[in-house]
Every structure is written in structure tokens, then in C-alpha cells.
Figure: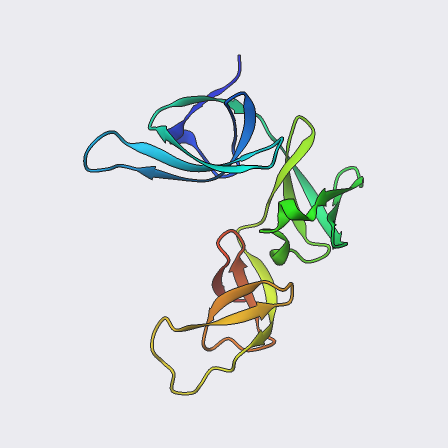
Length: 188
């Protein structure tokens, strides 16, 4: 008997069985309208086809949970078509299609450690740490006297990612970034 999860237990990265396939929850949002029953809006990714779809479920709806295995891997390099990793336990190397990792790649440096999620031995996605430290390689200089609160400017990081940063951040600064939301956290 498989584990059953309700919409109240949904978490990003969790895998569920839906319409006869295995899906990964990319993101979800609980909605409680003023009138009518509560529901959950989700963005699901099909593991076989790679298709991403938006689905809405009634609150409390039940699904079979698909167990995932989490492995620590090291990001080695990106050759343009595949991102290459090494299992930190077995030292086995493998590649994943670059297209499947488009959101995560801009926040990964060679030799950084990440977690890979696998379902039935097949990789299904990456989990990046809650924050990564990267150096700013390009940004406009902050203008003295610009002290209006919450003013930001774009900054290009050493991996090519672009995030909005406060005006006081300069080229060469190391900053902490939340890769899940592409958001500046603080200076490192």
C-alpha cells in the first residue's frame, strides 16, 4: 500500500501519482476564497515527458505519494548540452540534459555540492541549497545620495545569473542569493 498525501501536505519537490503518471510538484499555493471551498493551485512537471502543467485540486484531495531518493552530488561542468555531476558516495559520473536544469544552472559553480532527487533510480530534478555565495562581476556603480529605501539595480554574478541587488553592492562583492527565488539575501 502506497503512502497517501493530501493537498495540505504538498511540498515543493514532492512527487505524486496523478493521471497514471509520476509528477513533481514544482510549486503550489493554497487558496481560500471568500465564497466556496478552498483549493490548491499547483504547477506539476511530468517525469516521463518533461511537460509542465498547471493543475487545481480541491483542498484535502488525496494522492499516492511516490518515494524519492535524495543523493549528494557534485556539479562538475556544463558542456553546453549536458550538465555533468559526480555521486559523492560512489564517485560515479553522469550527465543530465541542460534544458531540464535551466532554472538551477545559473546558481551552480563547478565543484559545488547539490542534492539530486531520483525516482526509481532515474534523476528527476535538483535541490539547491537555500542560499549560495557568488561574486558580482557586473553592475552599475551606486550613486552617492541615492538613499531611497528599497531601490535596486541588476547585477550579473560570476555564473551568469542576474539578480536585483541594493545600490550599495559593487563589482567584486560576494553576496548571498536564494537560488529558488533568484533573490538577493545579503552581503557574504
